Length: 279
Figure 1 (tube, helix red, strand yellow):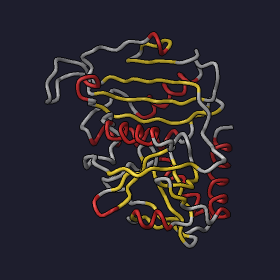
Figure 2 (cartoon, one colour; figure 1 turned 90 degrees about the vertical axis):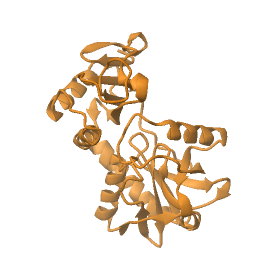
Figure 3 (cartoon, helix red, strand yellow; figure 1 turned 30 degrees about the vertical axis):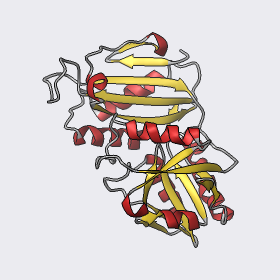
Figure 4 (cartoon, one colour; figure 1 turned 120 degrees about the vertical axis):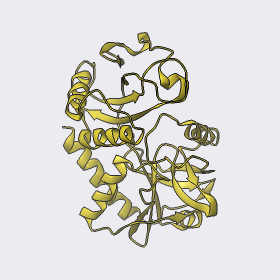
């Protein structure tokens, strides 16, 4: 298959798949999702992604009609149906389908999976960022389908010719990006926002922190601010599809790019790990 779609056991080419209009994803975005890269038909960090997926379902009081092991087996079987092994694998669970009503209906959750060809993003040139006020609710730690603020922030970045949009809260506290976590290097130490309700604790974020610890690079999980961002030695984004990217401009102003040696050590260690686990 070129692009695969899955819905509650039904499988087909993605462009030919349909779902009920009464699915609560259509009414309310009532569901959760996760996504990860696959290389050589090996799903990267599968256990971590599935664990987070189940944490998200629990946070929304949803009971998946399958176990973690059953979901892993399904995903592994679906990627094997593809023409290539370098893939982006997305899956979501919605609360179910039924008449429109805000309170939970008595229905069975629906599982969607989409699989499309994609290689890991690993840019040699620095990316550009734009800042955006973070007006999201206080469930950023749950990977829900309610992504309108991220959609609008990503569009702002695209219109500014930037790769990502950096969210900040009142007082200038930096949280994360529209679809990435954000980190800075300062005096040889990596700083990252704490994994509280203001950010989604990314799997790539955890891998990046672990790589720093293996390399002996100090890590501090604490709030930092726009002024810290602009004064940082390096600015780094991490996400499942782009594990470690370096930023060189923020709001059109040159920033970071002062400690390439440390950035390169982190980047190379993360890519080495990715390649080793997906051989």
